[in-house]
Length: 201
Image (tube, rainbow, N blue to C red; front, side, top):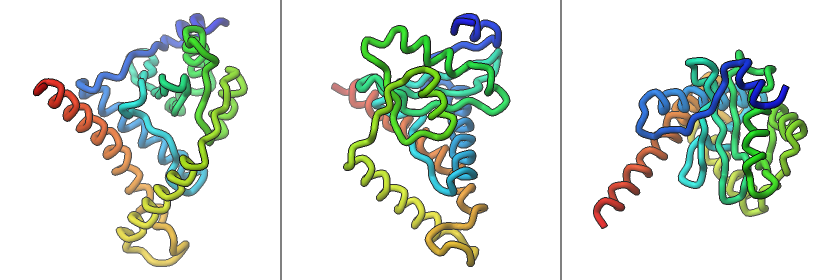
């Protein structure tokens, strides 16, 4: 089936993330939380990638009446930043169909930012996205950010034992839940401030 047929078969579609919609805001927070928890279970630490940011265009993926995922694109670099689909909707070709449709309207060969999860690595191979390797500066900044996150979470963790450089899994997961909320709310605050400054000029 072609991408349009796949999306139609599964009643799937995309819609632009609306920062004024409470439904969209809660959905993106919950989906990002799911992504962070899944990746923590896989790699044991905070996973890279943002669902929303000033430099990104974010689409929500709908399956029927449910917001089932998101796809964050960096339009300046024609690159996929992060994509996530709830587990119950996977294995149907929905994300591949969404990416293939995007590629058809992209003025350059569309890329995907590394590092990849196993599922995103498979997506890159299926859809022919161009892998984009982070710059050394970006890798260093990410490593410092991860170290800061680990230190902060560890300080808040009252439990002893295990790896002294990290919080226990229970506290880490709680911190990831807070982080998912913080990332989205920080973006919304930035959007409101930008709009306020624009209105005052």
